[in-house]
Length: 158
Image 1 (cartoon, rainbow, N blue to C red):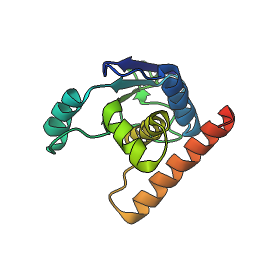
Image 2 (cartoon, one colour; image 1 turned 90 degrees about the vertical axis):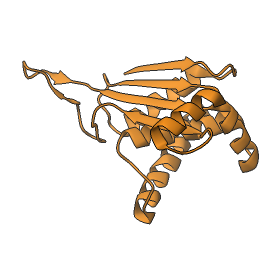
Image 3 (tube, rainbow, N blue to C red; image 1 turned 135 degrees about the horizontal axis):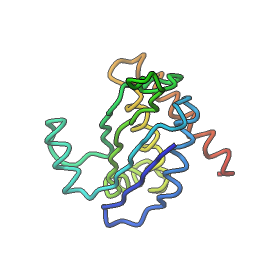
Image 4 (cartoon, rainbow, N blue to C red; image 1 turned 180 degrees about the vertical axis):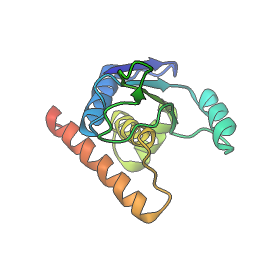
């Protein structure tokens, strides 16, 4: 799996941890092992710009997901090329804003790292087509998110 973490936020973040969590989530959701994912950490100004441009909502947000290929859990690829070879697919980008995550973490009573983990899992699930607009969708998505985070933290002894 190709997972690229780019930190342009100016905030120190454990990028290896986020990449490991992303791999855990993608493995747990049975995404093709050669799929590509990008995680970008940005400051509040950059997140505000993205949030306003793509969601037409003011101010910064915590996480945005920009899917590239239509992959679903258990789907082994993004399709096939002209030779019929399996193409693992480009999942897309998850954009995180550590300053917003830090504020939310304080409100929730846990650390910023835990909040960034939650947001990373949440963003990846959005890339895989999950949403939480309807109560049934919310229950499914947040249940998956909680289970994936619990298994990740259990493996780490946290």
